[in-house]
Image 1 (cartoon, rainbow, N blue to C red):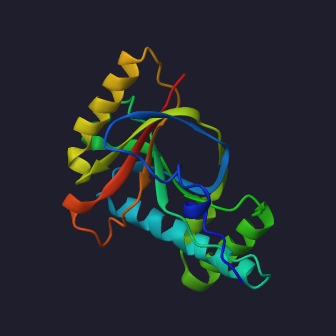
Image 2: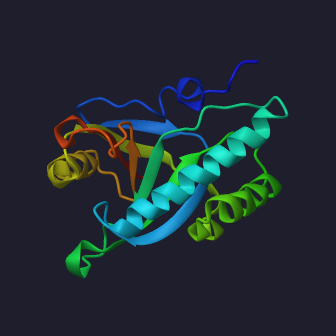
Length: 194
């Protein structure tokens, strides 16, 4: 049985160059959990854990019915328009899922994660559909604290092209930041535009 690999199926979605570029994206489906804070917070790590535990529960349920898939990369939507105290931004963590996953699968997975792993945060996870259409993106290599330079580069490109920012700042974490040294982290920085 072949596993569905969204990373390979949507190669352009999971790739970016070192220079900002304009890209048109199709609608995509995710499981998502909201939060407030930053990547260094314990609360952030707990939300990542809840999201992955639920994603794997969905995966194994669907593997049993011959709809296996590879769990996708972690992503985040960040509200960078606000300037919060102590760098506590509103965010939504996401994992892209196959289009055939429905609410009943998610709810069953959440019940399983809560009852067997006692991860109560899983109750905050919901399905999320995103249609960004046009985005400007760039690949950032390095720690999260060095991202502002790449974000400025992204925004300068948007201004130069006469585009307007729409929606939330979007990050696709190509590296697992839980076990990758900061200087080797690879993150796609993406900004919806019109």
